[in-house]
Length: 146
Image (cartoon, rainbow, N blue to C red):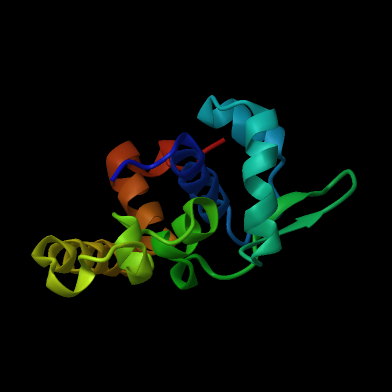
């Protein structure tokens, strides 16, 4: 399984919003500069996150983006499911009708088990966990993001 740039950048975007949770909206251009990601690319990533209700936005001089829920209530699986679609290692796991070998296939059972474990791990890591990890890695001063 390989995550797309869209998913990786989306997690970074959401981490910045989590670091700033409760401090007001953050401009996308500031996130782009701080994370060294194209603002245009981030503007494409933010759309499905906003549509799914994970992010809100406000317009105007004090506008920007902010998390719609507490960082402890948003996990990596939520983000990746929106940006990547359902995490599925092989197509026959999602749709058994794609393969005639499904009833006798031992490897499919492994892919189902592995996919379930990946989903379990991603679901167990919240944005608040990432904020804490970020603070530990960078120190309290540098962890403020932008």
